[in-house]
Amino acid sequence: MRLYRHSSYDEYRDAQIEKNLKKLERVFVTPHEVAVIAERIPRPVTLGLCHGVRNGWEVHAFRRALGSDAIIGTEISPTAAEMEGCIVWDFHDVKPEWLGRTDFIYSNALDHSYDPAMCLGRWISCLSSRGVCVIDWHKTLLSRVDRADCFKATTREVGRLCEGVGRVVDVARVDGRTLFFLARNDATAT
Image (tube, rainbow, N blue to C red; front, top):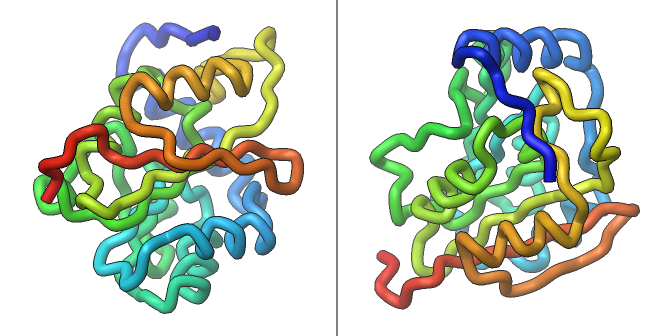
C-alpha cells in the first residue's frame, strides 16, 4: 500500500478539486456494474450514498436501478452544487443523520482518500443493520501515487483493509474491477 502525505488539508482539497475539474466528464462505473450491484442491494432503499461522484452519473444510474430517489451523491468539488441529487461534501466526513440509517453506500473513489481505513470505518458506521457498502476497486499502479490519487493498493490489500473495518459479505469481479460488499460487524446496528 502507498499513501501520499499532504502537507495540509487545503492541499488535499485543492488537489481533489483540480482533478475533478480536469475529469468532470469522465465516468468510471459502467451500466453493467450498476446492474450487478443493484441486484445485491436490499430494498427498499430509504437512504443511499454515492461518495466521490465527480459528475453525478452514478447517482442517477443507481436511482433508476434501485427505484429510489433517496440516493445522494457527495463530491468535494464545488461543481456538485450544480448537479441534481449531489452535495458538496468531503466523503471522509459523516452527517449525523446518516449514522446507522444508510441502506447503501457506493464508491469507486477510495483511491482519493487521505486515510482509507478511517474513511471506510466512517462509511461502515453509517450503515443500517441491513445496509451494504460497495467498494469498487480497480487495479492501480503502486508507483503512481500523487496529490489527487493519493491511495494506491493491490486488490488483495484493499480486501484486507475492508475486512479490517467491516464484514465482507461478497466479492465480485465485473468489467475488470473488483467489487467488495461490506456490512457492519456488529449485530446491534439500527
